[in-house]
Length: 109
Image 1: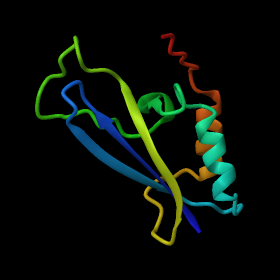
Image 2: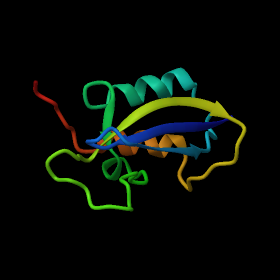
Image 3: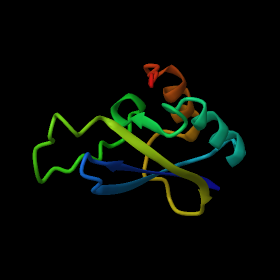
């Protein structure tokens, strides 16, 4: 089974743009293991910067971002098995190594 990673960008006005990418899973990594590996690298357990994870940026292209309210963070939705064909050239193994080596962000309240 391949792995579908779903996420979204929510701008400062709460408009949302969704995306999903599908990775091949040639080593049959368990989806629960993948989920846990992703969760440990998220900012506050929920967010990530798409460019740091080599994922398409989902900012709205129709208008310029408002620097006072918009941000770079994307929101993780879910990861699941799928029979759909991969949309990414890289495997899920590679993706997990990318996020493990990505810049570490820490949100301070």
